[in-house]
Length: 419
Image (cartoon, rainbow, N blue to C red; front, top):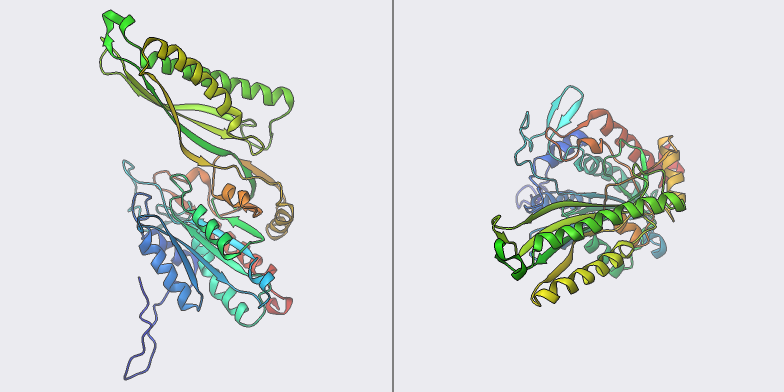
């Protein structure tokens, strides 16, 4: 959607689009954009861009290679001092949502529906609710900026393709680095029931392809069974997972704030073979690694690569053309709490809740902390509702997020403006 910002030759009036004035209406508007990750998000981004420009703000977009999706970054400025302009606080959210295929919804998933004390719709909690609250806050932030009362810039970052590997956020961060913008803090508005999440595990998904050699099952010595060798590697992955859990427990290397206090490995899918009487020449499987923030991918990749080399030697001794491929399909870094103590104290003061949480699911927060930006996660709704049929956010959660962001804005404002 674009704004008609032209001057009428007769009336000299400026036509503008009327945008929502509250978070519920903004959430309703955002849900109406079908931004499932396989689709473009440009209609939503264009709408938000026009809104920001109507507020007098300058919007920066970064696109995917095909120019079918875009990130949006906008700043409500504070002061003329370059050191101030290039810092500030980021409110971050992703615009894409997961599919509704095969889900029997009670109402149209891309039409916001209020039933009782809940608002239903795809993305209601994950995570257009937070975005709606942030957009509602912008006019107030602009007013305080224009009056010289905003003492810390407020940034809004909206990304694409978070749900399929956090693909958009790195482009935002690269653009900020190129422009010399180094935000002081970031708040990622994923659903946490408005509690403070200070760290999360990283996730890496690997795809393994085992190439064997076909033969009739009565002549197994002439073949190399891809499924058999895949099973050996899968067994080793399971052994390694057990070893990691025991090591973390024995060495005190785990983290009790996580539901599962150690790093995990898990095989998720497998396929291979064409018929029972044919030695299979191909087997594929995937596994994921969810690492504690202080661990790295090398902690599991080094031993797995060593096992692959051992199995490759065995296979290729029988048929040189056989072997195992291991490629990383997805990689999202863990979010650490190493540098966020000051931000945590601020959030605790604003929410009245100083309890810290750590979670196993991954967000764009890890990419922000990797870029040196202290980050926490705090947003409306429950992660238990995310991705499910009849996804919803409680209206009370939106109200709590509005209150939180209002206090956050006040904390970035000179005292006179809040009196």
